Image (tube, rainbow, N blue to C red):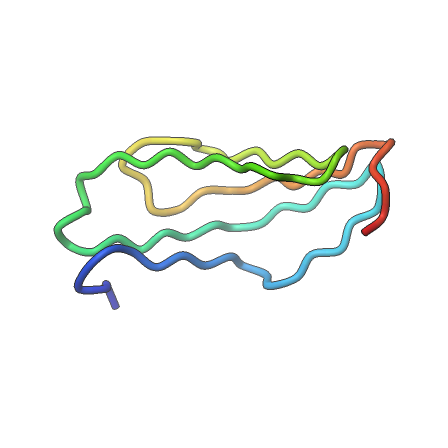
Amino acid sequence: DRPKEGFLVSLSQSRVEIKAGESAQLKFTLVKAKTLLKSNVTFTSSQLPDGIQIVFSPDSGEVEEAEVALTALSGAQPG
């Protein structure tokens, strides 16, 4: 169901564990209110631990779903 206002966000997994040098693929879903369906969105990330990268595909547009690649670079520290 669509929210009456704003949007709902969900990920395909609530917890992901990866080791340095590994990646995980997730599905990111953004359910927009009917009034926001034609709105452009931009997916970004911030305040990530050192050595962690997140890439959204697509990263912008009138989208409601994106694939998310979460990567721990070889020098990433546990935690």
